[in-house]
View 1 (tube, rainbow, N blue to C red):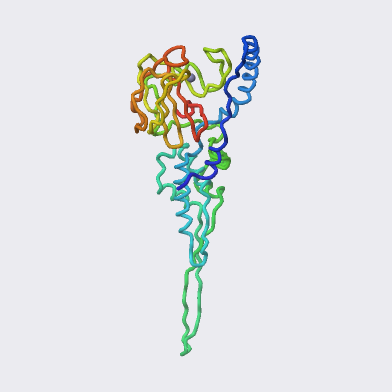
View 2: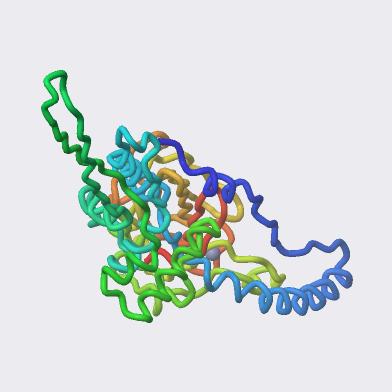
Length: 325
Ligand SMILES: [Zn+2]
């Protein structure tokens, strides 16, 4: 099944280029640096608010596809001779309810479970139809036919039946709103859930304690110019193993002045960059699994000490890596 149009559309929203400024002469450069720092500071205030909500999507593309398919199959069971259209169960409502019931972790929601939930949206009706007729001998016949048809329940009715509390109902409607807005944002106040199939790229190093530079605006430690940091810097001893954050395929093994020795690994709709490596231990085109050793922490490229610069892109757009772990 193809990715839903609303998610594909999101992916097409071009990523803003928020890179730092450049200046020619020394003086101009210094002035530009000060001015830009102020502008960047102001911008970061503006941008910090929405990006705080840029957690993992309310639902992943594959998960959404599973919901659409299973819900469609249940809808099809409501087609009868008397009602050839049947009812169309809204898959986003089913997804929102599951999102709340399973705390946004869809990994354990089977197809059967989606179908069980979807059935809450349909109400079965039956009517006995009596047909009285007389044959040629004048004998009376009574035929009884049972007519069955289905109607759609509202989400409010479903939530009542599921005994959702007032708070849970509100969360569910928020969840639905998030899905209607494109699914990239989980509902307000929700945090990213650690997902199955992801692993922190530098085992043994802490995502809170060992981050020397966070995602977002900063003054670059080497050229002192304000710039947008598109990843996180994880400080670790030289030679520490770096592992693949997800199953994927090595797209690029490269080396340049900025990133030093680096790796780009593609994993479905996600792309990961691992930079400043001392050693790269995989080659282009190689398939890697979650947790496979792919390199070693180094200090190559524009770097002030051994660390891993780690970037995550979703549908081509940079994301704060910490939102996934
Ligand atoms: Zn970095």
